Length: 113
Length: 114
Image (cartoon, rainbow over all chains, first blue to last red; front, side):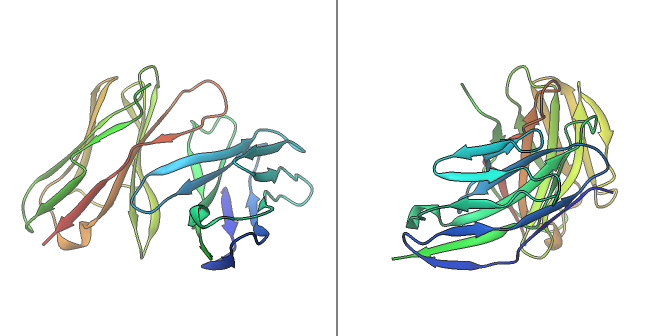
């Protein structure tokens, strides 16, 4: 079945550091890929998405590129801020899968001054 | 536009009591999902509906849990009787069937069963 694997956290960075959170997936078809973010005490929010190979999703300085050859969708940001501290979830939606999302386990990011 | 609305936001109850969580999806969305989130088990999909019909309830932990969607704008998740191990944050999400299936989450209901 479909699965998503994320790097374990917590990831602790200093403000303005470069961020990478790794995500790889297993799927039978050609899924859409997502990154969701959950701030403390809140629900999950869509951060960015990509629907086909080589697409790059971007939002709020975050980027991720859909790499079919390596089945990866790594999240990157060039300069993190304290306000980026949150839990980040990678997810996939299989074509014809009834809009069901398969989530990774989440990676907690802590950004310190 | 109003997002997904959940109520109550917080619920504290005693073991054995019935708990009802409510969700109003985004207007026009035809998929609705119920999730549970705990530190130990992470984010779990409990059940989801398409056009008010349950499609997959394999994530419902046991018979004490039930979910209904009587119309396109309302769904409930009921726990009867509740147990301390049901303490968690319960999220509702909705999406549109056409397109890539982006889900939009509500703020969650934080449930504590004493």
